[in-house]
Image 1 (cartoon, rainbow, N blue to C red):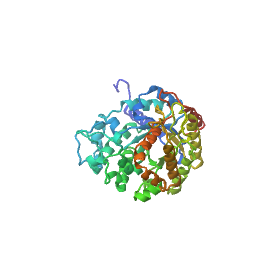
Image 2 (tube, rainbow, N blue to C red):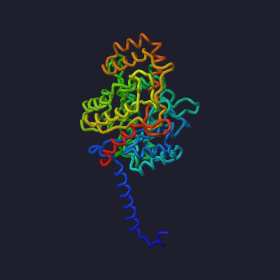
Image 3 (cartoon, one colour):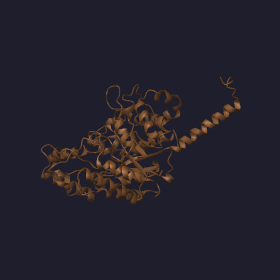
Image 4 (cartoon, rainbow, N blue to C red):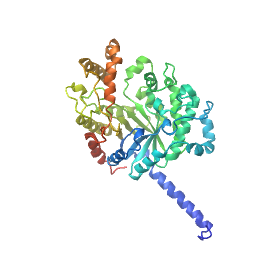
Length: 446
């Protein structure tokens, strides 16, 4: 064929060189310079919505430059086979040429391939989250149990997370300039005790700070081993007061986590939900304060910081005759995001990812409706977060333990049902258009 085309060896070499430089330029166009970091105009969607075409159109029209995409182990590999509890990260790194391509072909990427292609064609780069260890994010073992660090062992868990994460990075590195490694890892112990990570024991590996740091370093390797120019970030949880960590002698307060993990991360990101339990007043400016707090503890004060998650729950329909403290409206949600975005930039941050643009079922009241005791409990929780002191609010919840674990838990669950800026019918809410306008102001920037 080459002879019939009269192509000389010299021309063949030139073609390969040209192809190399085209590929190189394409990759560089999809990289982020930490010294010229962009204003993040982003949101997130649930894994199950990657096939939702209506939602995709809403994303394209929102003036985004990034979108957080969750690709968990369970999403691409629902069950591990031929489990080897002696598998190590070191072995995988030394034999990557033998296993990466064959293994990648066994993973379920097709839905993500299409979505990421559609995003990139519309100038939206994915920020892919990998390595999350919550129960719904992990694959199953052949016996149906979770592939968690208790069942696999901590060393093998690192290996299997490295393997799948490396495969995700390998597939999408041309399109994704930054990967989020794990999620809210600094509060993994409390998450385990609450039942969303396993094993759920007092001695769970999720309470071993040195092992958590090793896990974060392992996920960094999964990214950097594939391409050193890719950036890594971690979504640090900021809502748990320092006093709770002190009383429980528990590592993980967000500023301590940032100081410990600063050398591992190229970019610092965090989440915060100051209006989770109370609808009013608007605490959006607190996200800016947390941005400033994080910057203050960094060794390099110029390292980019952005808010990877924040939200304000809202009801799909007006809730009549409720206490104002529980009256989550679309207008209040819109006002919250305006306040948040300005406060982040005013405090040296680089924008935000809204949680979230998945259709929301809306806030719902607890069985029987909101009560005076609910109002008092919400005020106590608000006082605890504002003061950073668990006393005397903690005493209220301990002396009303049955109420706290039952009815007030329903209050919190009802609020948590209302995240999102798209209603249950798929229609954008007021805050969608507010963010569209805010993001549009920065659409001419990187």
